[in-house]
Amino acid sequence: MTRAISLHNVSKAYGRSQRAVDRFSLSIDPGEFVVLLGPSGCGKSTVLRMIAGLEEITEGELLLDGEPANHLAPRERGMAMVFQNFALYPTMTNRANIGFPLKLESPGQDHTARVENTARMLGIDSVLDRYPGQLSGGERQRVAMGRAISRRPSVFLMDEPLSNLDAKLRNHLRAEISQLTRELGVTTVYVTHDQAEAMSLGDRVAVMRGGRLQQVSPPREVYALPENVFVAAFIGTPRINLLQAVVHAPLEGRMSIDLGRQRLPLPEPLSPDHQLLRIQQGRQIIVGLRSEAARIAAPSQARPGEVALSGIVEHVEYQGHEALVHLNTGSQPAVVPDLESARPDRAAQRRRRAAGGSGIGGGSGGGVGVLERLRERATGHISGRVVALDEPEPDRGHPAIRTPDRPAITASDLVVRTGPDMRLRIGGQVPLLVDLAHLYVFDHYGRRICPLPKDIPGFDV
Ligand code: ADP
Image (cartoon, rainbow, N blue to C red; front, side, top):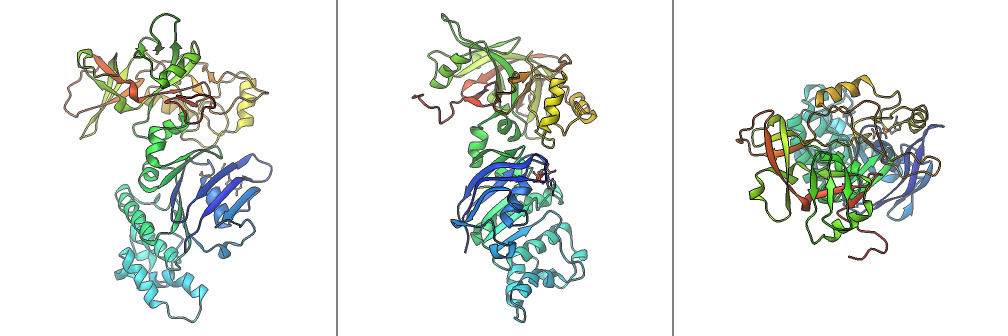
């Protein structure tokens, strides 16, 4: 049996500190595989632990198959959890480890057949009589999975189960987990900070930031239609190019997006998506271009919908099957807080802002840290403007895009893909074609405004 899980406005506060999870709502169908994705500290494990019953829910409601379940003890929920650090009993054989939950459930019964079946399914039947210490990392994680599935749970909860393994093994086990959970048809909630893992595993991906759900959609949709700039930047490698820009919408003449040194003219007649940009006239916006949205080619080769820019080659990253070209187009990159760091301490940010600080980088307090500065130096990005990702609050009214104290000395602002054989000279100027069908625009608060969001009241295309 597999279960439906619903969370309604669920919050978690640890003591008097701010909420680790804030009004989180998500409904998961029976048999569905949902991945909770976000940077470290955004509340993913806390959501998982509340579903498991290992953490009390401060506010809100958990339903299992439509029935209130906040009060149920963990063992009454019929769920199995797999953790990052395997948590096997070192003094028991692998056979005993896999059979342990069965032994607890029905002591005195012979579980040999069930244990051996499970081990066969996971390809570890030849190591059953060894101890966990005699296994490789991948085998140990399979034993941990075996222990979780031997009891035929109604829900799998997996908390970064592959994080301790090397990259090759991780990819291999990822495929196995996907196959196994689909074969068993068990509802699965999987926590990871690795967007590639999330995209390859989930029926749907739930992206979290600072305790809040940002978007929940199938992998294709979180990539193609990110609801805000945080989701756009968190999903996809290389990271989406985010540039500060201003919309120019003269009464007479063509609308364009000013990127600083260059402009993107919008093709006439304007598409419904581009029409809505008119109301942003004169305001700071953020343009998002994935690396596949621009190519190095002469204006004469432009296809319909492509417009010309140019850039200076700063650096070429050779990747074997392709190359990533880092270019300077004279624009200012927009910086998205919280992408890698722990959730920001909003009170500290407010204090810093009141004291005239820049609030760059998100971090857990303390302004621009050494790590942040090193990262900036390594990437050549001394921060551009910072995008605020929260809705404006009446008591604040700070500008959504804040200017840092230090001047920008940006080297590259745009990364594009090319074939591996293109010969490029560092410092040379190259022509670019940008495909406007793949242009994203985000407003002051990081909300996507192009392509049009689905639910704009009163806007009928
Ligand atoms: P993630 O799984 O996304 O890395 P967690 O759910 O583990 O994040 O943590 C979310 C936030 O809650 C973090 O700021 C973390 O420090 C805090 N937190 C987690 N567990 C506890 C706890 N037992 N006591 C106090 N704070 C906690």
